[in-house]
Length: 458
Image 1 (cartoon, rainbow, N blue to C red):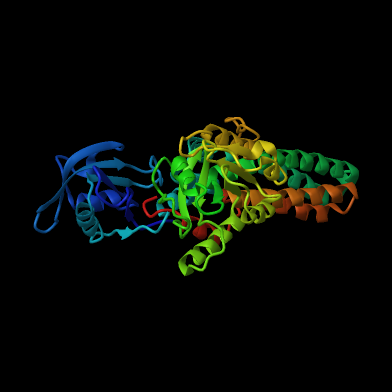
Image 2: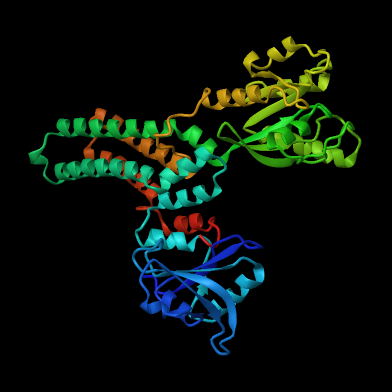
C-alpha cells in the first residue's frame, strides 16, 4: 500500500498565465490545508470543488501567493488517491515559493511519471493505457493524438484482455485433460487447441497489420534531406517547416551540421534532417558536417534527395543515387522555374517515376505533389480507418510477435499430437507475453523503466 504523499509541477516551468502544482497521497488535503487560507478548511469541502484563497507561510502567516485550489477525494481522481491541485500565477518564483512550502510539509517530490504509476498500481489504468498517456503528451499530429487517446481509453487493453481470456479457457481445458485424462479424448483436445490458437493468431495479425502505420504515427518518419551543396535542401526544410529554420545563401557549404525540425504532412509526422551538402571538401568544419550527413543518410527512414533541375546530373549525385537503391526515397527536382538541363531518365533508373517530384521550392510549387508522394510511399495514399485500434508502441509490437510465435509453436505441436503438457507451455508463454502488454505479468524493473521515461509532473 502507498503511504506517502507526493508533489510536482504539472505545467511547463517558465513564464505563463498559470501554473499547476499537483499533490497526491493520503495526507494531501491535510498537508496543503496547513499552508492554504480560505473561507472553509479543505478537509470540510466537497470533492471536485475549486476554492479561492492564499498560500501562506505557516509561522508568519505572510501571504505568499493568490491561488485556486481544487480538491479531488479518493477514489475519484487520476491516481485514485486524495489529490489537491494548486493553480497559481505562472512564473518561476511563484512556483518555487509554493513548492518550498509544500516540501516543508509531510510531502516529497514525485519521481518522473509517479502520478501515472500510482494510477496503474492502484488499478485505475493498465500498463498500455499508462503508456498511452505519454504518447498523448508527445503526439505530433492529430491522428497520432487520436491513436493515443484510444489507447488511453482502453481500446488496445480490451482486445488484449479478451485474447488472454481465450487463452485462459484453453489452459483450463488442457489442465482438465491432464488431471482427468479418462474424461477427454486427446485428439479432441488437440483440435480445441488448434482452433483457439488460430483464432488468437488471426486477431494478433489484425493488430500487427496496423503496427507499421502506428509506429510511424507515434515516432514519426526520420527524413534526411540530402544532395549536393546549393541545390535547395535548406530552402526545402524552411518551406516544409514554414519557418526560416536553416540559413539559405548562394554560397555552397553554408549548412555545416545536421539541422532537425518536426513537421506534419497529411497527418504524418516527419523528423526532417537538413544535412550538409555531400561533396569532397578540404574545409575541416564542413568535412565533419558531411560525415554527419552520411550518418543521417544511412539511418533515415526516408530520403528526400534534392537535385537541381537546371543543371546536368553530377557524378556526386550518381554516387548518391546508387546508395538510395532499395531505400524509401523520393527525388525532388528543384528549380523547375529555370531552364531544364537535368536528365530525368537517369533518375528513373534508380527510383519509381512516381517518386520523382518536380518542384520550385522558391515559388512553393510542387509541395502538394511531394506530400502526396510521401503519403503514397508509406500509407498507400491514405491512412487506415480511424476506427482501427493501432499498435504503435515498439514494446507492444515485440510482445505481440512473441505471443504469435508461441501460439504457432502450440498449433504445430497440436497437429503432431505432441503431449498436451508440452503444448501447455507454449500457450502459457503466449498468455504471459500478452499480459506484459497490459502489465499483468510485467516485472517491477520493466514497470520502473517505463515510468522513468515520463515527465516529472505526470
